[in-house]
Image (cartoon, rainbow, N blue to C red; front, side, top):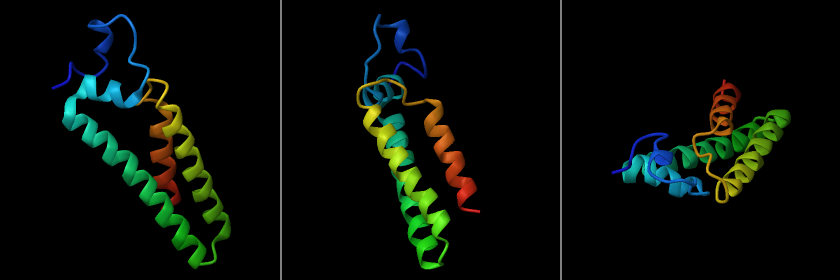
Length: 102
């Protein structure tokens, strides 16, 4: 069990400096599983979109999907050294994912 969303600072002076650790500490094992599934689903969705767009000849959409894969990889790499797992970038990425799938 975690201490609750955005409550880690109530128990510790410094942040965990890692999104995975922060998610586990705040939301517990189940929250960490949900976080991981969300990240994995976002990547899988963008890769699928890129593949389908290329097959349909929609090369501009395929480039956008490739850019989103790269941006997500950068965000995931950055989340290993910063604690912003619930940050705006993940929300923006999922929103763009939904828009591009239309």
